[in-house]
Image 1 (cartoon, helix red, strand yellow):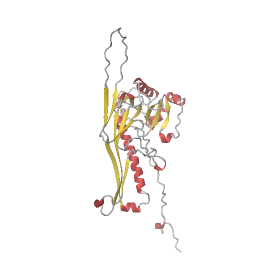
Image 2: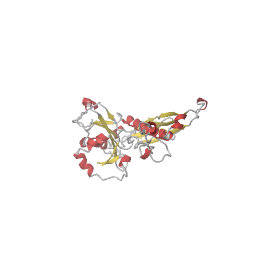
Image 3: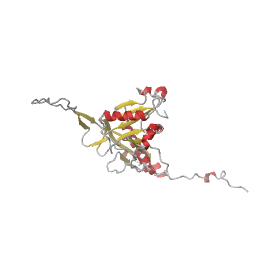
Image 4: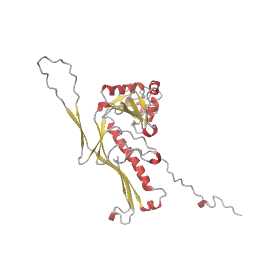
Amino acid sequence: MAVQTQSTLSDEVKTQYLRRLLLRAVPRLLHSRWAERARISGYGSAEWRKFASLSAVTDALTEGVSPDNTSVSVSTVTATPAFYGAYIQHTDELELTAYDPILSNFSAILGEQAGLSVDTLVRNSLLGNVTTQYAGSAASRGGVDTTNDKIAYASFVKALSTLMAADALPVENGQYIALIHPHSYATLMQDTAFTNTFQNASPRDDSNPMRTGFMGSFLGVDIYVSSNVKEYADEGASSADVYVMFLFGKEAYGVVGIGNLDPREVDGAGPDAESLTGSQAIKPVDIIVKPLGSEGAGDPLNQRATTAWKTALDTKILNSAWAIQLEHANEFS
């Protein structure tokens, strides 16, 4: 008597399809969060203005003699946003036969791409345009080595003191902001001089550090961790990877968008790929859906549809002395 097995009836043995989609890995997107923001409408550019500080008066007045008139100066920074975007095109057959809701998933992954793009564009505008320091005894990126130039308490404090000496104002809550890579954070947490001070720091009331990226306060600095903080692969001594820590005060840099596009942080890596940005009254990006047949005569059989994102952005350094780019090695270099 023939016995029916999985082999003889292989077409009947199916793999169970789990409808729940796995979350995608997206870095904490932080670089634009503390920027000075502006939006323009009806103009092509935006302009920031700043009056220079006056020097101290050290000469006593002479009786009956007026001193020289004090001169003042003003400088401007102009930002001209450019547009960025991407889209996914799909067919009517895919829309009819796909098991997953492709439009919502296309929107989710495009939203993540938009967020990563904005964060990377802002980050790249900071690189090389602010005050640059090197950990340890290194004098250049190519001289950063894995033995002597790891990020440490001493280099952190040196960068902070440079910011303070430039009279940089705190960003928020009386705190400066530091952005570091997870590999650099791991190295700092093995520095006893750092950890002993860190453990005694006053805690901040942030409900979910994994969601905000906030990992604690140290010497008046709020430290945030993101894997999108810059890593220069193989650019140090003996092909060491060189990492960046950004440390900045208020009004160090600004970002500008156009119309209803406000280039604030975009965080699409929340639970079930939901946005963590908050209110969408002002959108960081436009999500644009063109349904089947929207192309008119260009798509006579209603065969093609697209999902897209678009944003407008420019980033400008407003005060390079109020932002430090600390280049260093770490345990993973």
